[in-house]
Image (cartoon, rainbow, N blue to C red):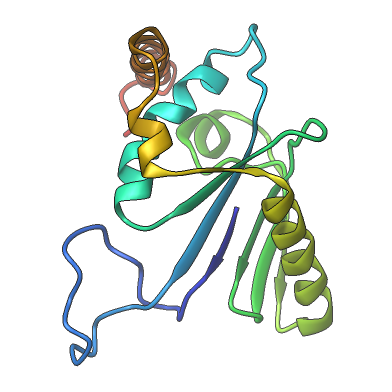
Length: 163
């Protein structure tokens, strides 16, 4: 996943603020996910359930079809990046042993990461609001069921600390 924003203020979902409001944050957020779901992994079917809200708030989504993509990479501006095994979810943060490398003020390396993410993003199949809305009912139901089953399982595994 790649984002470009002005830290430290977070991007908050909600109505856009006026351009003169100093708390308004300009951000470009891109999400890249592998295209072909693994039939053994409910999470691969659950993730598309989240696309509607992401698209609604301007996140550009692409599904990568060339190879299996499993890296967790984030770039913010050109002064912060992370690469590693951690997902930003309760399972990774509470239960799993994960490792990430964080780069701060290493512009040359961060530029290489950003460029690799953008190349993969451009090689991916973009998901538009219109395409997402036109999904078959069976696919929508499968995404909803997988998402809610995953959330329920995470709440049980993390003893309610998953939100």
